[in-house]
Length: 235
Image 1 (cartoon, rainbow, N blue to C red):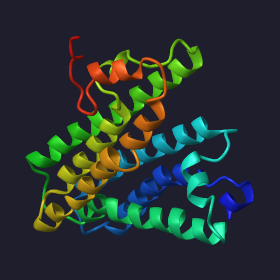
Image 2: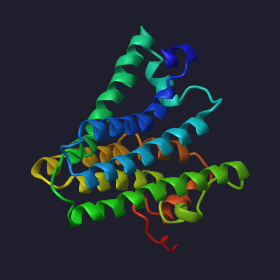
Image 3: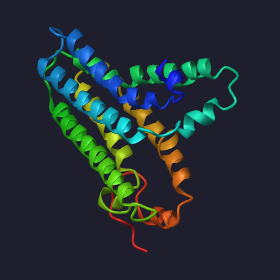
Image 4: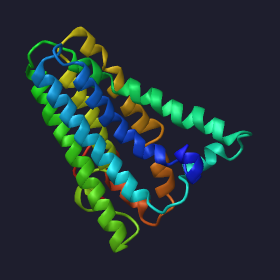
């Protein structure tokens, strides 16, 4: 209803991060007395921090802007755009959110005490949140300064997509947090799917297709890692 009234369905991108935070809160409450307390609270805290930061950042970034080209193109030829948007944007993202949040849901019910994988998962999640936060802040500062065509300083010197790398780290970290049982191990489908979309579908390919028209971007691609942070390649 909000998207239809505003004629902008990009609001769903804000709901994406907030939705994970909501899942974390509900799962924390529902798993009380069943899952290990340390595991439950840390999974919830990290997910809430990540989700709310993402929601606030996207809301701030998209304020006053027109419809996202992805959604405009998707609905351009639809006979009944509002119903099509409900199915292909809102319901699809709701299903994706539920599926990708499996580590949060399953890990919170695990009664076993945390092991090595759990503590490693905290580190991986922290790295992910840091990369996303710093990368987004550097990009916002670059856009405000209008200092060039391509951002190639800070984290962007080492990877063309520090925010996507951070996103992937977050979900692999949550998988490690849930890795206390065979059911937790089965949630590996969540980070695998998220990484696939970031690298092959909605993340990197769309962004690079858009950026490829900018002067200097081809040279940036030639010297900068496409995902994992690495030292720039020499000419």
